[in-house]
Image (cartoon, rainbow, N blue to C red; front, side):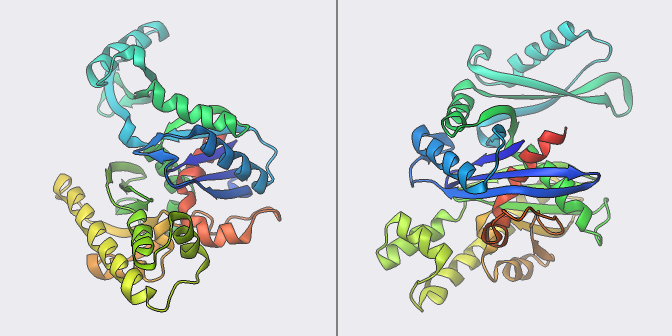
Length: 344
């Protein structure tokens, strides 16, 4: 199963295998997208996205054509509802549709709807908790179409926050040996246009929220200051070659801004959970690879901050690109979480 993360700036693809309790990276690729292929989480140019997926598949060397994809949390609805235990499958589906009619702000004939039985409601054995998930069909159809244009068959659809949770629980939490389960851990996934904050406690996600901030602001400042187009600025960020003034004029101010924004986002969590305290911050997403960001966030929040690298300790096939592993690990969190769905 390929985990395929279609973000606003790139497509990211990973294939994992598992032997006993150990995962191995079998294939990995990241391919950038044209500047306006995706706007506001909506695929505008499916052909361009499909071409990027096809190139990522080729570059990775994988032979698999089965894919798990995700829709962004901001264009999906997820809700945990409680229903009576003991319902037949037909009764359960009917009850779920009734609940969806209350919680989904679109006509049900315009959405893709799914649900998962989480188990008995804690403290009430007569009821069960159901996770309800829905997104407008047009949002999902565009992603499926792009994957198919890239030569893949979509078998699993998830929601991005749940994919992040999967990656954290399976690949990162076991390595936080100094963090006990009753300590809260904050994971920031800093994308091109959106930063998500997910907080984990007792092995599960207790909070998730998206905020409008990301690495595109950094790219646009490079474009403005050095008269580059988007492709040139993106390439310069990855490969270097920027003027000597870049560090003081662009990089350091952006790192300071990012630290301030992450601190502010954390305050939203504390407002919702005033009795909890985050003991560790993990930084994921492409921006997390910036030198100096960990230290600045740690100074600004007073909380130890480290990079969210899902590949630490994982063996990998010889064909897997060292460059992608070393440079893009933090950008692969959602793709990893999706690839793990193949072992459900």
